[in-house]
Amino acid sequence: MNLEPSVVAIRDGRVGRLLLNRPKALNALTLEMVRLIDRALAEWRDDPSVHAVLIEGAGNRAFCAGGDIRAVRNAALAGDAEAVEEFFAAEYALNRTIAEYPKPYVALIDGICMGGGIGVSVHGRYRVATESAEFAMPETGIGFFPDIGASYFLPRLPGKLGFYLGLTGARLLGADAVHAGLATHFVPHERLSALAAAMAEDGVAVIAAFAEKLPPFSLAPHRACIDRCFGAESVVAILAALAAEETEFARQALTAMRRASPASLLWSFEILRRGVHSELAQCLKTELALSRHVSRHPDFAEGVRAMVVDKDRNPRWSAASVEEVDPAAIAAMFA
Ligand code: QUE
Image 1: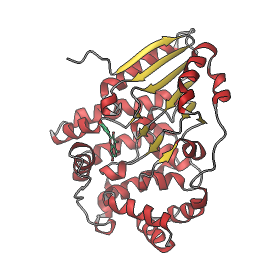
Image 2 (image 1 turned 45 degrees about the horizontal axis):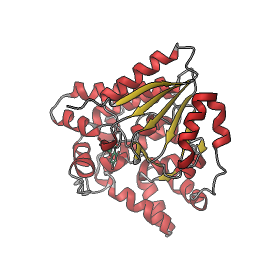
Image 3 (image 1 turned 135 degrees about the vertical axis):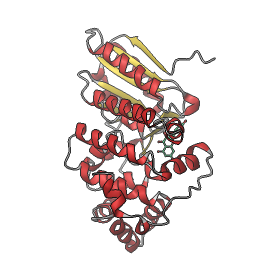
C-alpha cells in the first residue's frame, strides 16, 4: 500500500505549496496528480490569505519528467481511447488554469523538467531555475509531439529557437533556459530552500534578490545557424539546411532529428507552424485533437516502449525517413 500522496499541498505562511511527490518516477504527472493540483489551485484562488502558489518536485533528480506516458501507452494499447482523452484533456486544462491563474504562480525547477513538467511551470508567472535544472521537449524521440501548450510558447521563443528545441529535443540547462525564455530567474540550488522560506514570509517580491547574474547563453554562437536552418519551410528543408552547415552543432542537431520518429517530426513541425498564429486556448484545443490521432499511431507506442518502458533506446519507427511518410496522412490529422 502506498500512503504517500502523489501531490502534497500545504499552506506555508503567505504561500500555498505544491510538492510533486513521485520521486522514483521522476515526478511524472499522473491523472491523479493533475486533479490534486487542480483542486489545490481552486481552493487557493479565493483564499485571501494565499498570496502566491509555489510548485516544486520531490527528491533531487527531477522537477517533473513529463506526463505519465507509460499509462497513456497502456490505455492506447488496450484500445481505451476514453482514458487517453481523459488524461490529455485534464493535463491541458491544467496548463490553461495555470496560465490564467490570478495569483503569482512560482515554479522552483531543480533537476529534470521535460514535457508535462514544462507544462506545469512555463505557463506560470515565475520560473526559477537552478544550475541543476535541465529543460527539454523530447517528444519527437518518443513518436509524440510538443504538447502542453508548446505549440503556443515554442514559436514565441527568440528566432527559431523553439522549432530547434521542439524538433531536436535538445536540453537546456538552467541559465540557458532563462536566456531562451523558458525560465525567468536563475537561482543557485543551494539558495532554493532559503528562497522558498523567504517567499512564505515576504511574498514573491524576494525572488529578484535571490536571482544571480546569468553566464553567457551557450547557444549564442549558434543562434544564426538555428534561425537559418529551423526557419526553413519544411522538415525536409530543415534537414537539408543542417546538412549544408558542416558544423559540429548542426551535425548534432541532424543526428537528433534522424533518431526521432520521421512521422512525428512532420506532425510536430505542422503544429508548431500553426501555433504561431493562435492563442494558447486554441493551441491546446489543436493539441488535444492531435493527441487523439498520435496516441493511435504505432510510433507512439513504439517510442514510449523504447525510451521509457524497455529503455533499449532503439525504436523501430513505421517509416525510415521523412520522405517515406505520406503527407496526406499528416494533413488528415489536422483536418
Ligand atoms: C521523451 C519523453 C518523455 C520521456 C522520455 C523521452 C516523457 C516522459 C517520460 C517519463 C519519465 C519517467 C516516468 C514516466 C515518463 O520520459 O514525456 O512515467 O516515470 O513523461 O525520451 O517525451
